[in-house]
Image (tube, rainbow, N blue to C red; front, top):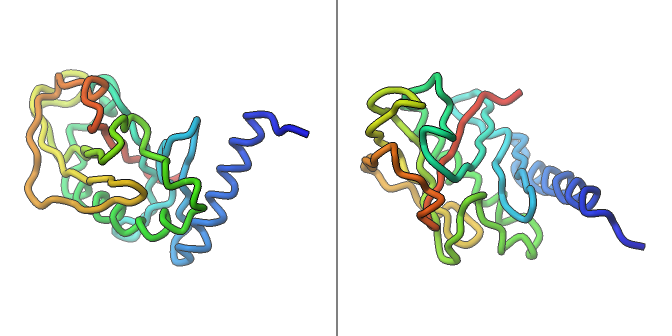
Length: 171
């Protein structure tokens, strides 16, 4: 008997939610796995509110929410919450060790950019400063202190070790 891919993916997502929910009992973390990649993390507790974070690869002005010009102080809090989620991700089954955030093509590590502020809002942003969260193997490994400036015309699809984090209040 074989399990259809869609059913298999659904079972993986449910299993991820259960594993991460048990590992992080204080908050209902759920690793969102789609097509063999970590598409995001839902239920991150940031400053007493729950947020969902999704990972996107592409042109900043195409993937970043148009109404925003940065997450402000929330950007560093999101990066720290991703770092704190590490033990929950590591508690997942061993075969998940090869999973990487969506858009991460590098085998070693990826830099996840969390925009703090930009010169203009998408789709017309020109220069942006971001907080970095580094993902290495099966964990978010560190959050460097200084902001990282980059040109908003940069398309991370051409940079195998870089992607964006998109933050939304949890539903």
